Image 1 (cartoon, rainbow, N blue to C red):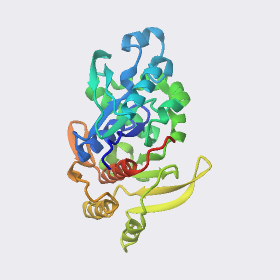
Image 2 (cartoon, one colour; image 1 turned 120 degrees about the vertical axis):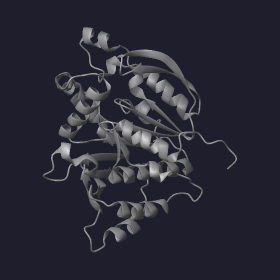
Image 3 (cartoon, rainbow, N blue to C red; image 1 turned 90 degrees about the vertical axis):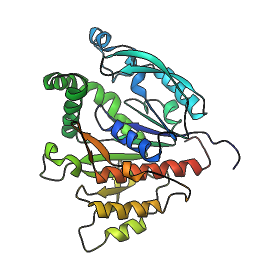
Image 4 (tube, rainbow, N blue to C red; image 1 turned 30 degrees about the horizontal axis):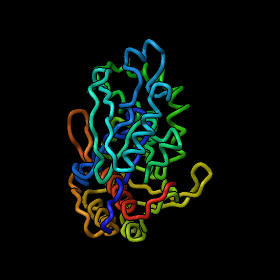
Length: 314
């Protein structure tokens, strides 16, 4: 036990505005900013916004990114070594000075292409892919890019059209490499713009990593009320998986009970900040999503489990 552990690395991949930063930052805040380093692989673009426009290439294309440097930096982080990370400024569309990054106990790597090559995939202990319905993702992208990046809705829609071919070719195929696929979606009959924090979530739990025994969660969920959480055996990409469903209508009290049940699977010495789970920006307002809080807690569980497992390359 006296030997120094290498960092545990979580990969969070998804298309633009799929919710990667919201998920990653919530995990960081809940575990503790001093224990979690978050980096974004979108910083490894080769070209700034004007250069991409002139070249007719999108940021989603591997040729627009220093894939080899991403691989090198992920290997260094996995070994606990510091990196000099490039910084892409999404507000200006240009590059800021590089940043010295020393990995903490946990490293969360989010971005568009982090699962693109086998060399990168082998650096992760846990791989997560965010897979919201396109209608919902488009709404999130319009909200974010108009509020934070100075675009008009028409410009965002035009960008989505131009990026669709690369999304289908390079981003969505990475889904098959994930250990967990997370899909937030509106309840049936509810338009995305009205769902807000009441989005349902479905997790595809693949047997590529050990998942918690959820018997106690399901026993609780089997109460006379509408079960807020369900586990169903099924198939995804022709492979057997478990589907974990969490209703957007899950109450604060139910969430607290479920959090306590998940917490029982954590190592006893773990200290977290559950009040920081589930927070997201709705425009300029900070709001709370209870399904998001449960997803972030389950991912934190996987980080602690991976920390205590013998480290092998998968």
